[in-house]
Image (cartoon, rainbow, N blue to C red):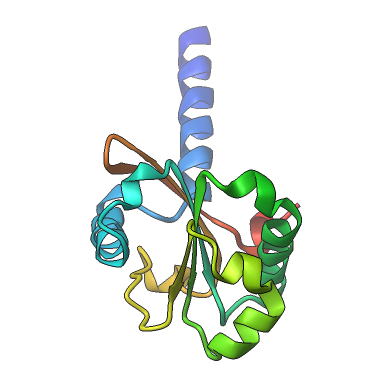
Amino acid sequence: MKTKIRLSIFCLVICSITACNPLKKGDWEKTGRSLLRLDPDMYAYHDIIVLPNQGCEGCISSVENYVLTNFPELNATRIIFTRISSVKLLKIRMGDSIFHAPNVIIDSTNLFEFPQTEATIYPLFIKAENKKITDISVQSPENMH
């Protein structure tokens, strides 16, 4: 009986964890290919932040503020700005030092492909190791702190 209860709890926990991240690993392949189109050396970075310029305003502005505040510590993080409505406004908002930094990509032609259509309005945090994506998390209103 205790084994059945433990197994049920374990299954419930696993289901809860996997339900929180709607992105499936199979969806990551096109994202990985688009990262390499933007920069063949993309996987030299283990942490990648993708910021769409249009979408969930609160989500995007909170990550933009994080980048502005912590930029000196993010030199080992690749930052991609995509779905840009105005390059000029982005440059004004983020500043010259971030806009022209070597770890920043301005994807003005929208080469970056989000793993799923539902994710296109949210910032993404991508982890990579051994030239592969190991995790993608979405910054959405449900998981903002």
